[in-house]
Image 1 (cartoon, rainbow, N blue to C red):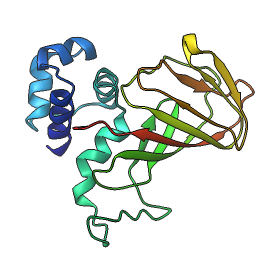
Image 2 (cartoon, one colour; image 1 turned 90 degrees about the vertical axis):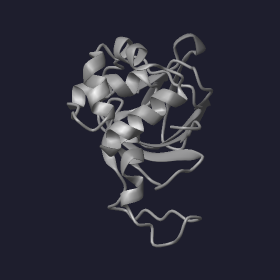
Image 3 (cartoon, rainbow, N blue to C red; image 1 turned 60 degrees about the vertical axis):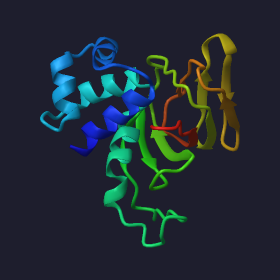
Length: 185
């Protein structure tokens, strides 16, 4: 039920109707209506389609829907996430862990991936910052160019920029990602 409410909130913040979201996500309007009312549960494939259509990710939708279930123990002004805590799940070509709880102005994530092919481009309205902790990554920003990053390198790109990344050499890579949080998302 919380996930459906979060999807509705993000959809409305993006100015989309249920019919528009259904078209963008290639899902049925009745299914999305039931999901938003807590009467249906999405598969991971459906959740990925919804997240992409909203310019978000599965892990961000899930984390936002469960934030109020995780007591911070420190009040509303501080968010503490210990090393084995934080919502985890699929993000891009790997797995991410969100490193903050609550309604904050940015979303820091730890990301691990090993995808050798770049996959599809992502685009969202929020700015994004990447810092390579370990491994090598090729960041493809479409018309803005491609950038080979090594440990210690960072890149920032404005919202609306097509982006994807992978490791052509193989092996695992580890990123620190900070994504701006848009109002209502």
